[in-house]
Image 1 (cartoon, rainbow, N blue to C red):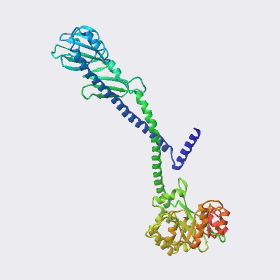
Image 2 (image 1 turned 60 degrees about the vertical axis):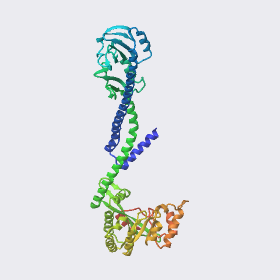
Image 3 (image 1 turned 180 degrees about the horizontal axis):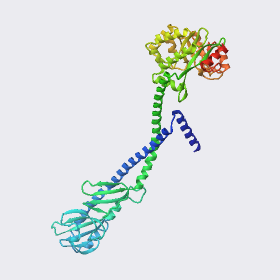
Image 4 (image 1 turned 135 degrees about the vertical axis):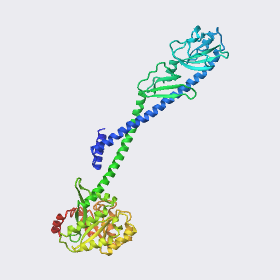
Length: 514
């Protein structure tokens, strides 16, 4: 368990750092799914529990209507009996559990009951009057056979209208049977049956639970069912436990996506203003000759000193600049900044400055005029510009034609990160290049018994055969340098010689090493 807690804490710290999450963001991303889970669970549980209660009510109404239908047979049998047959009636009713009695009456009095035997009660003791309908049923607070006990009575008149039978269904026994046995959780707590303004029980009692009304299709009967709070909350917590993890995951994914999108959009605006406010600056990493160890050029690398965020890594803002179509303005800024920087230095002839240029630059209509200007401007200070194109970038046929035209203007062209892309040979066959910069991943194989170690030798041999200038990137050890020099790699670049440095540091470094 402690390991899991530590893992979750580490993940949370990573997300907070990666997406710059504030307390407000964390509160929303945690609080919102909890509230949504509570609301959703409440609505779902209310719907499903209400549906379950209605199913219980519909089932019991069907059962009640079946009992009322069966009471016809009981009443028709009772009408065949006379005043001396009460014993037969009692025997007939013995195994009919829902029916608590049958009363026979004539036009003046009740004279027989399956429960009490021979009785002598005035006819007006029963309400409503039995002579109203040939067949009818009512809810009454009590019957002559079951005094003080609410019941449903079904009244049958004989064909002469001089007497009839009343079938008594005891109310409380029936209501109790409508509620399921004492199992947890029991869906229905109280049941009330209504008909024509009368109810079973006579005085309904509900607690604070939700009441669902179910109406019979073929009669005026209505059943009111109070949902058990225990049943409701039992299923509420089940649904809450299922929904909360799903909603938390969804909220975090959506929140991080929105924050990332808004952050990238906001950062794109900052890049635009950063160009205008000259927040970007350049650092330069020397490229040394394998023959004499002197610097013959540098690679210009852009950095961003954000006014609030501090130093922003290039791997964060370069992709955003490309997505937001700001890479061309940013590259133009880099050209001008490099021009301004190197006007302050005294350089030897044929000193080269490499610039990373995105494919978007090669679709600009004024690209040839722009690079002709750069060529002439750099030539005035003894510098020759070198365009570095990453091999992983997609180059169309039109872009290749533009690059060829730039070479004809005297602009040097290099393939950067050579060997890591998918179109290496096709690129070499499409147009002529000047430099191949071998990616650091191949330099790292020197001195190791790696499967890819032979690839480096193949790349170097390819450069020699095609008369390309080979530049090794990421040289960090003397062993790597010796190996590359022994195989006639023309230029070396890496921390073994120098890290990227600001202009004033570069000037001192050049004086010391050149």
